[in-house]
Length: 422
Image (cartoon, rainbow, N blue to C red; front, side, top):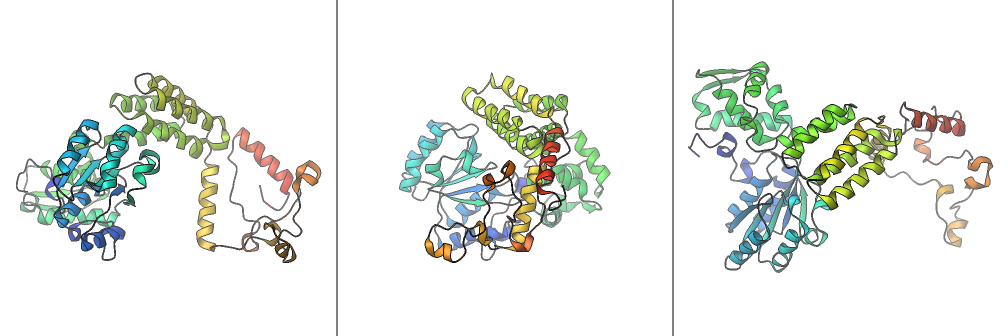
């Protein structure tokens, strides 16, 4: 594209899989999407991943390389009427690919309107979402689609994008650009390739000289002056929700309520906000205040029914409650520690005394033998080993330092004595 008014990210948009950055598990030599294209057949797809990793680009490449009609809709401004009109057009254009950006924003009725066309093959659906499709896409549509996860681009892949743009963009290559430092470019764009390239363009254009030296300080200075410009894609709400969550985690209800207002004034989906509160209630508060999970779940259920404008009060109440609660990530760390141990140790055998023994033969083999039933003992507790021998005595849960979890620590210490060092 030779129009300087078109943003750099759009000018550098790849047109083939070989030009595509990252996602080698999907588009590499043995990638499933490459194999689909080579076969000339593509099923309906849901592409799930963070912003700026190539979901829209992949959809365009698939349609282009298969030479199929391509129609794009945005779930933000398309309704059931738009969907039906597209389906009617597709009936006379066999193989039409219908790309729906932000499909998680479609209501159930909008998704239902797609079902018949997808099922009968009138359209091949490619949906793009930053949200877990298990929560946001109806099961009937999900069962008719293949879900593929796109990963964050690595630091090396993002730097390669910068170098490729400087070497090949028709306008940038006219200047002598020396990138001395990359950190600010990468950090401000947050791994979003689209934001990265558009920020790069603004930084280069921020000097009147044909020789440009890019440093972290220069990038920060230009970014502060052009915060709206480099966020042309409208992805700033991902930065704002990050500030929102970090404010609650940091126990600052004033900052949290400010970022909440920013999201609501921007028309952010109430369920998007409530879902993050629900995750935070478990990840960052946990057993320091178990009521936080109940509160957040009630909030999610309520806003799902009520919607705007009244949901702002419910979200505000829950935000302030969570921000003002004691914090603990002990449960989060416990499951991450356990998952790491499983990956390191593999599938360790279940100790014989813990195994189920539904048959006589299993009992004769020792299944369930010497198991001690806790309720047969004083205070409903007896010391015995519940972990495989290879990892016995391993501590995965370390209670946080707050009144509730200190009480849990005290109980565990009384029960287990010297076995676990609580």
